[in-house]
Length: 167
Image (cartoon, rainbow, N blue to C red; front, side):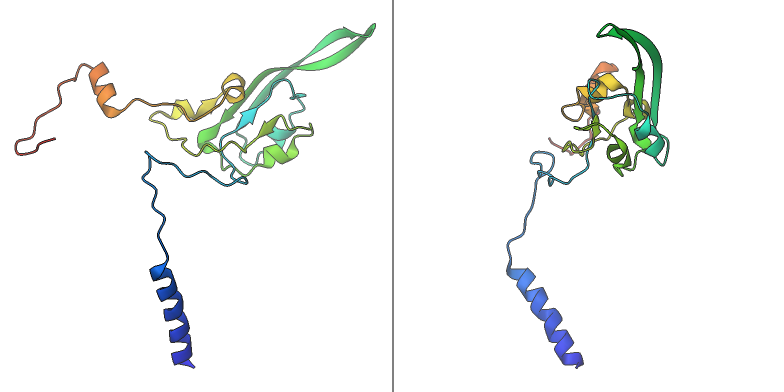
């Protein structure tokens, strides 16, 4: 019995040994995430009805919404409508559970997590706090300066030379 289990495991090992390996040279090459991938948020101001259900559904309270009521005349009648003043998300604390997306009653959704962006690193924590304009016009991950560019801006343009090391 033990020998059969060992041979079964070795069969799997040898099969994987001869299959071609997939290597991606990140960051020069990037893999495309699957369609079900939950990436960075997108937000649509036109679709949002300011119901605050997404903020209530968030288990860690990272969605901040401010609204005010306005009275507008529609078809000769005064209607009270909610106007969205603020829609902010603190992404550094987000666990990308998509409960905010599920709670949204509009069709199509006013907030969704299906962007294929997974590069959300930043050098400053305040860069991970997005308002509704940044969420609405989100296309790709923000471009950050390289260490060489930061050193050049700080006046440290001449890198230290280490003896015996050639570039």
